[in-house]
Length: 479
Image (cartoon, rainbow, N blue to C red; front, top):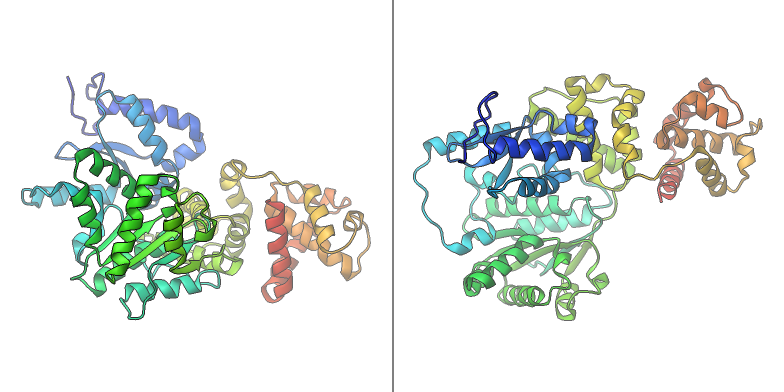
């Protein structure tokens, strides 16, 4: 017998009850993530059942929902599917989303059955209140929340032109760059704004994964023509992570013919991939050539100034989402995040999410040492462990000197400034305490290290060369 689960403590649970299934999955997940990470992001999550019987894992905040979606949802789905003998679908929602959906369900008219192909793509038909609930788009990814900088200015300008339906557009437009540096953000922003600017036009946004699964289902259901018609009716088609279709011959062929049909008809196409089209060696030559013929916009890794801007914008967004008023953090904490999380904007934002989730409005009072303590479990996982000795060697090589000079008693500026830079790097790239760092620099006192760190912090604001040196050394040490 299948029993309904309403999230109430103490009710009877059958062998296949959702509560028991989630308990098994959660236990496995806690073991994989660790108590600290699980407690920070999933400890307050609860399994809830909507009035229509749909099951959802509900997090207390949107921030927690976003973290789970990025970092754990795929694994949660696997554990749920493995643990549930009835193979019931499970959704992920914040508490606000779940309550809003419950309110909509209570007042909504009876649903009208849609054609089978409508679920194969996510369509933004007009910019009304319903548009914000399109499942594939994220309403936080808009042009207003995108932080510009030298690394992404060109891509941002081209995205705005596409969203404005401007004449003389390039077709297709391809954004490429490393994972986590804003490609998906731009695609969402284009979809939202294009829909607002031209409500009568058909805008379709989907990931390459959705394109692939939709294409396969269409073949199995013998609804291929309807699937093709749905895509080729778009005035603007956006496909994210198109590199995932490489190596899948029939899917590549279908995508090639879709893109060719749209561009020949003057419809607009925007794609993203993790590399420039010329580097997609495993992709079908015809499709690769079609991509190369478009406007290719590279997005470079964010520099330090841009990373700091992203953190400040993220704090404002978190404050609005959680109703916390104004949120701020100490400059040294933000600078630590910007200097430590350089490989991905998502990792950078995730670190800030962790601090806010743990400290709430008190995030502004966190010292650098407290922030490092909170983030230490996350810093150690998946990150190269850097030693003070490696920092000294890299710094000496960069400045054309000997490592022994950095630990010597010599105080002339040609040695003192690189020594201070190395101490700053040791403070930000290792978990060593100030006294420990001082001992490794010739037995110096911790106050000397603290002075060096503060001195470098002050100098790099106005000394562009020093800032570049630190950026180069940081990237080199992290491999």
